[in-house]
Image (cartoon, rainbow, N blue to C red; front, side, top):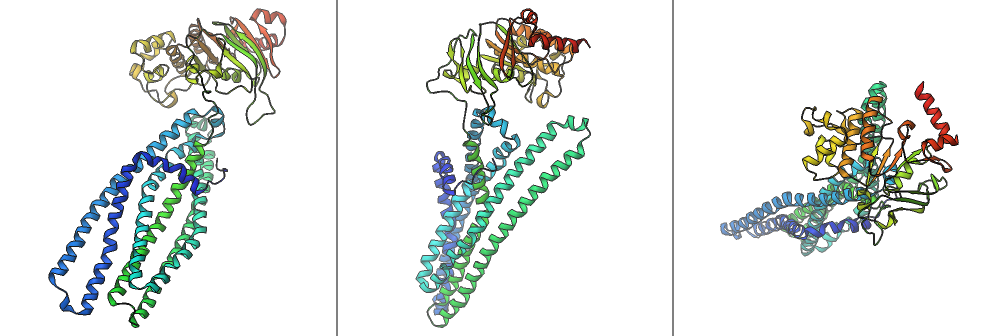
Length: 590
């Protein structure tokens, strides 16, 4: 994703502005307060101007009541400024946080819809960086951006009008420098954005590397490769430092240009203003006010300059947000898709073919044409890479077929809603994923809102209840990240309990016992046999002895399904299955 072309500023703002829609009142009030805070800075030079001109005209013109009136007006403005600033500091940030929350919600919702293909190509650490730190920068940008530009715009406009009333030529001389300053900073601003994006991408790479190392910490320690992991992290960290260094180089250039023009403006006002003063074309009070307004003007420019870093961070965050939001949802409900109800479990493959989008020349499956009757137990065997898991992943539409179609109870699965289709299918895989939480939370994931009785019954049917009640807090025991506190067999039985609770009519068992020892395999196999009763079951077998009782066995190779039949039938044929089984039996016996 880092290689994606840069998006134009106008496009990014067009994508971001709709998020303000829900908070028009809050934003309007925030901007009104921003206007109020500019009052003091605009009025103060006028007060100084009036007092100075009165003093030059004659000290007798200055009365106590007049001075106190001016002071009272300025004090009132200060009170308004304080209240307005308080609102901006609190509600402005709160509104920004609301925008961040909405964007994060949209981003997470979109991520939930993306297919396996996207996650095959994208590091989780990159996604985490975009959904956390990137969006925090957007929060700061979202409310500061309109505030800063409005305040600066009002100050610059007001200063220009007021200064023109004092001396047009001096005003024009000062303001003509602004376009040159904007041109001078444009190069550095563009480079800053690129540097920010590169740094953000590298943060994602660091996140991904840290996640990979910490989740695999047991492997790291078993190979005593701590030094290797430290070296890998150090390389990524140094790369990040390089990007940050480049980022600060452009920031320094940006600030140098603006500072140079600021100094030029001050010198111009001091020297040219003094000459106008000498020639009687500028009053003393106007000269003092001119210096104060230029100070106000330059303060506004300085705030914009300081905000430019935040602006570029925000635009980078929005760009990286848009890159994920633009990732196409490849697997989704077709127009007019209908929910499937009362599923019997008949599955038909009609000339099904499949290849991955990034490898169109290599067909993983080619023209699979088979019928599975409701309640039938089908075992898939064959060499690694033959497409067994891929074929099963096509049934719940984790991937879409590239040719042919799959039907459940005579209905094309692409005409069904994804939610109803996947609710009808249960999966138990070799690599069990348990969420960080309690036993109860992990089992109830199969049926959110399940009762205590339903959870316990599912655990009993999966052969898990006996070990669960022995845990320190029973069903409320915290099992650690990915179930790290449980054994392989215990994790597998919780996964089976989860599917029992879901109670799907179609079941997919993807080498569910291949990673277990003999004792655990026997326990889990009994649970799986109980789970498969009365369901259409697809079993991907690694240990061939576990599928001898299957109703039908499909032998998949790179050429497709080459053999079908029962265990006895295939053994009599003495073909591919016979060779595989004989080889496995020989290994098992030895």
